Length: 338
Image (cartoon, rainbow, N blue to C red):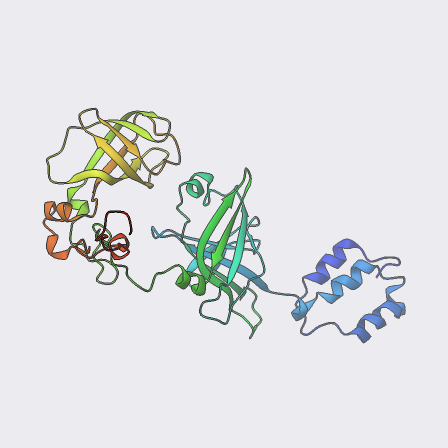
């Protein structure tokens, strides 16, 4: 060994040595004072010794995002792609998570925030603006990527659903809420109301019992001829048969910048070939875009009869409302007292 400080190349070689166990303090002291090295050891060399062998961490973070449309994205903090559980996690240096917050109460809110940079092809500003990550399910894991066993891994830091998403010019932040917060957002009771309480076109046997097949009534492949900003769309399509009600329906964009997004419709006029949107499209529609038009329902008895689903009507139009319950009896005397 040459006299003087240890070369940086030698330190790098030492850092890659896979020796068993952690370097003891006595061994490090002996190296410093030993005559064989012929000089003073640098601080960098002592630091390198501290990370030789099993004392160096072999853990990495994994982030798995499952969107409601079934798309799964997986990222890792490791400096290369990593396969875990049959899924390839892509290296992503720009994604990080905050300290997780948990709650022992079933109604408590546990949360963690994910922060990323808008420089990855997998998470684009257009998808964030379009709401594709709303209510997506997120899991954050810590796993061992090394060959030495680590009995403390794997363990899950947090899991939940993406709630509020905020984004700027170069970064985005997503709040991940746990099952307690999800339960707080789900109504456990049903209200009596004059209008139908079922979700139109959804019959899941749990929360909705509407038997109407919305997809079978949809008008598909409508081409856009122009638009007025993001709320009025002009199209080229003949008037369909009187088999459905179109006001209050939905537009499902199939081509263009808004592809994959659904918007709530206010009114549709097939004579003028124009429709207005309640939900503004993320991007202004352009000529050449296309969409599918799905029917709507005002959720009253007449509309339910129109669709032939009156037997499943979920409203209570004959139940007196709050105004009727709070009415006072008419006065028997109309003249002045006395």
